[in-house]
Amino acid sequence: MQVTGAAISALGVVLKADFQKGMAGVAPMWDKVATEIKSNARSNEYNWLDKWPRLREWIGERRIKELSGHSYTIRNRKWQSTVEVDLDDIEDDNAGMYSSLAEGEGQAAAKWPDQVVFGLLPKGFETVCYDGQNFFDTDHEVIDPETGEATSYANMQVGAGPAWYLMDTSQSLKPLIWQLRTKPVFANKSDPAKSDYVFMNDKALWGTKARGDAGFGFYEMAFGSKADLTEANFDAAYDAMTGQKDDEGNPLGVKPTILVVPPQLRKKGQEIVKATRKANGADNTNQGLVELVVCPYL
Image (tube, rainbow, N blue to C red; front, side, top):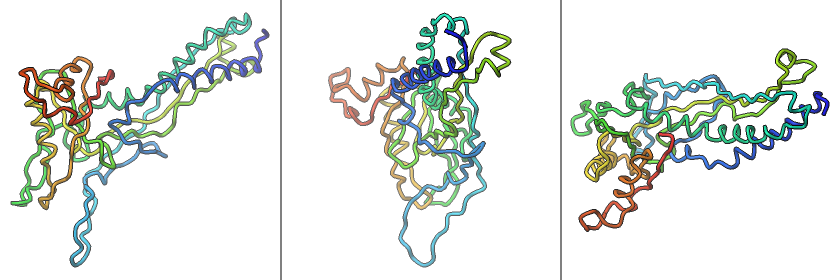
């Protein structure tokens, strides 16, 4: 086959179909823990995150929740992956081998949000969120409704083991934010009559480009622990989340829905929230309390 712009374009149609096939074959996990928010700029600012929405009886004038001085910004990062095709393979009608590469590109593009979103979770112990504290911390400042004084709330347990996470994903905003600027696009820039790269290397290029990033939402809806995944520690985390109140003493209504664990904690997670009975034969009252999510990206 003669290597022409038309031949490369025709190959691009095939590779793009393989790319789409790869994307369609992946079941994403990120939407279990993150809310997608579209972006139309280099970054998005989330200075409204410290205003938990709640209706109160209207007595007298409206009570206005002013945006605080807290500022939290998620900047879109640029991502790419590139496939190189030897023009000799096109000339020799031997380009079929690149179909699997293009399909792999599609699979990687579909897994991209999973890797970014779940990759953010371990960083929550050392990365600040909207209130200026680490997302998982022992001293988030809250107001004691009885005294009106500032006090601390802990949404983490200290330990040295693999981290596990309890989350409420039933609210309008999930614990994490998936900020998407540009979906993955598979494109070619290899016209042999115009491309310096083709001329110098005798190879054509196909590549994927995307823009976006993940960030933290309400810390109140997540609890991170590096302590052993035991029934006692799970219960303590669950009770801490459900016991939260606002500055007027009203329950926030947080109710954990999922337990996220890395593969090495799969068995312990199953024992706590899936087993019918405990090791001592007693009924497991936590059975089915939350969904168990075993995440390979942790």
